[in-house]
Length: 129
Image 1 (cartoon, rainbow, N blue to C red):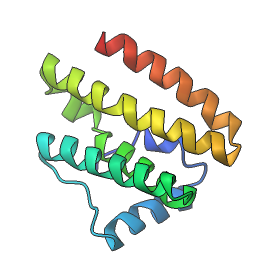
Image 2 (cartoon, rainbow, N blue to C red):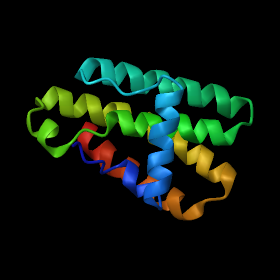
Image 3 (cartoon, rainbow, N blue to C red):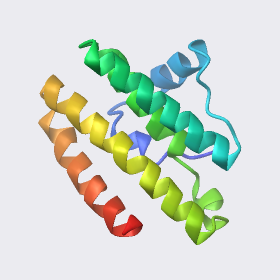
Image 4 (cartoon, rainbow, N blue to C red):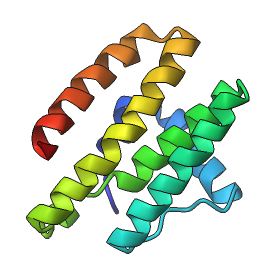
């Protein structure tokens, strides 16, 4: 079983995590296995989140953003097999997703998760640049 590391930081309870995964399945947004397909899928979810955010539907924007995090959440074993380019691509893909989630959490008034997001974005930027 693939272990979620990133997504667990945003889901306070296991039930929230399970509900998000179930929502992704119901919406036909299950994450693919292939590396390139996962990057593309995360980009699609990020764009969907942007569209919902513009419509002031922050719940759906949050779901799409967390779905993108889930999509980019590779297991430690998968990461060990990555090339340096794949590591950088993953980090570069995660930064705009976390940036979008920052705006959603700000609008929702969730300052605790907002603080963690700023730390994550900073660390990812160090990896990318």
